Image 1 (spheres, rainbow, N blue to C red):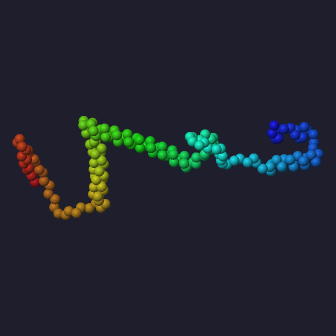
Image 2: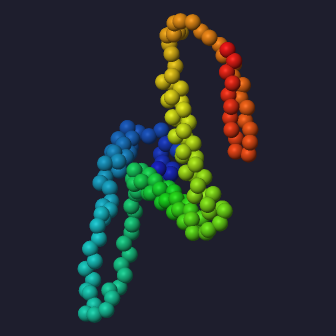
Length: 167
């Protein structure tokens, strides 16, 4: 049994004398300040090596602790690797689509190009409309205004257009 769990003089219900209490206190203090048992931090195998062949295995305990930053880096590496596997599969599928000459492959090639062109056209239209915005509302033209009506006639197999202006 351990000294902490063994019944002592206090557990018997009898009061200790001063001499017994001083001796018990000295024992407790001596136990508290006793040097701890030495634990080896390294191991040297002094057993003789065989003249040839493999050496016999020696148990070497391993208690490594992985720091948090190393574990995070490992998890991030696994995630990046998985992402690149997905990108690689997508590239492979794209190459399979490029290799097949069919309507699907033609659409697969041209639709992304058309989408990019549509985005550029939308950006150009937005910039053009921003450039044509006027902050002041006044007319730059002075002089008489004459309204005119135009009648258009198209005739023949190859269209001949005739415009009549009525003023």
